[in-house]
Image (cartoon, rainbow over all chains, first blue to last red; front, top):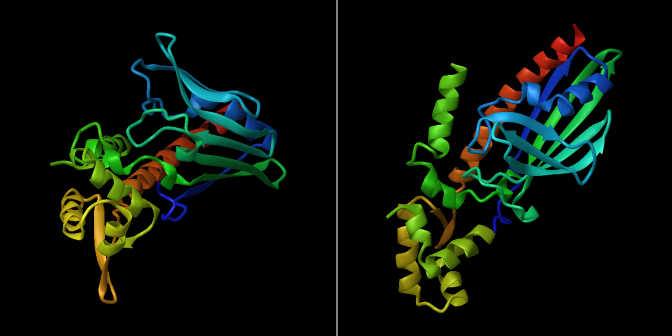
Length: 157
Length: 98
């Protein structure tokens, strides 16, 4: 539906003082310890967030009530080099299993020098998401993007 | 009317989907849909009012396209989210080291 739009992406890079194996392990096995807890889709408070350690696996959240909500799929799991996830959360924070509406998050772990790893993240094909309709629920309402951005800005201020 | 209301109409939804694929002029839309040119113009006016569609002059024609602000808002949001997440991630790696 948005094939006329160019690839919209976010790229980030962070350097950590750790070898690649540990940098990869913290990103995946310890995902829950660093993921911003306010960013989840279930009704219940976040109890755990999991990236399954294999291609074809799920990545999902578990609420304090035991309920699970999928975020997407693990497309590639190649420790300690590379991780690729599909992101199926739409503009209104609902999960859509359609791969045509999913963006992709690729994370590469590059050892600059022994003991130091550059983590390069690319979240691409954001244009595949269902957003235009969400502008409706979105811009005007406190639960929409404008509201989320506002509360986010408050949180980081 | 809001954007969701505007897309509740099947003809407007069809116009919106055609424009999402690529920008088009009024005449092209009228050729591809079972509605008259004036009717297409009316629907485009509504889609513009709710910021789903924008237009621009292309020579003697006027081209209509999907307004990308919604998806750009999502991109900006994810940009900030990853900044925040990776900062926390780097801190978690350092903690692990201790």
